[in-house]
Image (cartoon, rainbow, N blue to C red; front, top):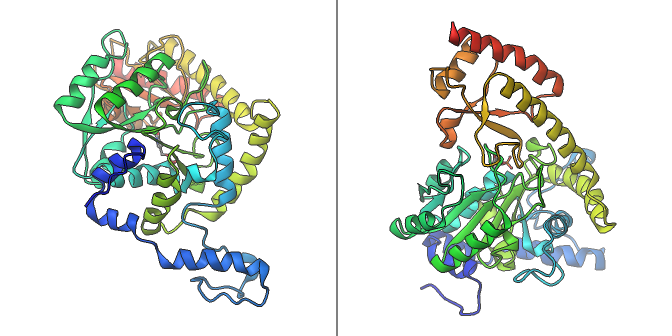
Length: 416
Ligand SMILES: Cc1ncc(COP(=O)(O)O)c(C=O)c1O
């Protein structure tokens, strides 16, 4: 039987409602080994005679090369740093529904990249449910939702003028019995963001229709305009943020992501219990690397400065974006995003094929590859037909200059 606590947040009560029985048992169990390990860890510094025989790792053979298991919810120091970074970067302190001191380690669970974070969150909320996807959407979302037993439903968010059509969103939520929505801003592939007013309206709509909001914020600090916002600042009681260091700190191979919620039971209790049966624990080396990067970034925030590392990364990304866009415009492509002047953020540009190119986006990319000129991703993959997503993060400014000629060669071939 589901136990409803009238004082708990919608995030907890809704998750209790949708979580499948098997996972419900995991959430209500108290795994014995971590409990023993936690007690043993506390005793060791007090009592040097104490002997630990609870651990499942081999030690003392190559002592300088050993990497131990970390806690399922991640290293506490990293969790604390991520909580602080999020609090400063998105100005969360003092916002309704956010703990008065801002987010701390209990609001954060470390996962093996945002992909695992999304996957686990979907296992908690999506089984047997319709999950709304707001286009454009990262191509992996549908698989992540289906693997968790959910059904992805695409909601048309924008009208022809690229304004958010809240009536249309509400209609679809009610008609399709959608119980959670997965949003991604700044968006992959378009870089689009929602305005503060729209985020407020979305939060109100989520309350009216009792939705869980899963906010994929992996590009959140890579903004070229305006102040970065997190959905946590708008609907903290029903939002789970999933993000990672993959994009913003250029370490996708380290596989360090985070799940963040204002509701600590979700991140500090439920997440580690489920992580144990997904990956046991996130990559310790990756976490140590990120600790070394985030320490300075959080220190900068504390001293009233913008975080140095990410600011430098953003500056270079913007220069690449400008160069890429000028090349594409010169060749007859036009931006296919809300702001037709310059993308709002993220690490790719989505552009429309020139009108006189008669092949579709998928054939265009196949031709570019067949001619051995370049690769990019057809917009159809994200729900944007006749568009192409050019990622510029993996190209230096030199490469972008070389790409200009290769693109011209493909266009000439298709026009001949
Ligand atoms: C929108 C979006 N979310 C999540 C991810 C996955 O990130 P991670 O490397 O942290 O798993 C990507 C990667 O391309 C992405 O574009």
